[in-house]
Length: 113
Image (cartoon, rainbow, N blue to C red; front, side, top):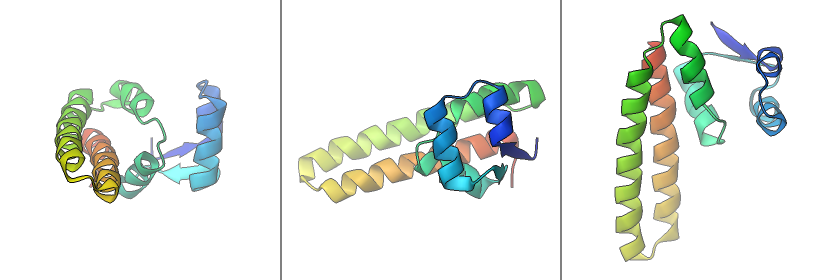
């Protein structure tokens, strides 16, 4: 799979709100690249379905899961630290870094450069 399309999402029963967010973010089609996966994670598109579906195409789901677990740990640690600092901007940064890590974890699982 080299791209994700609106048609592909609808054919697999994607939620209407996720399809709408996909269209708003990418239009009708998005190439499967590291940059686009990070972009998708940053706008809160659900990427887990792509990782699960990808298992049938040779995607190494365990790599995605490990990357997400590491990202959750780093995010939660940063949130706990930020909470002690009373700096909401740092919380936003922690959440953005988490989203980027999730996108990169999926790119790693897909073996993308």
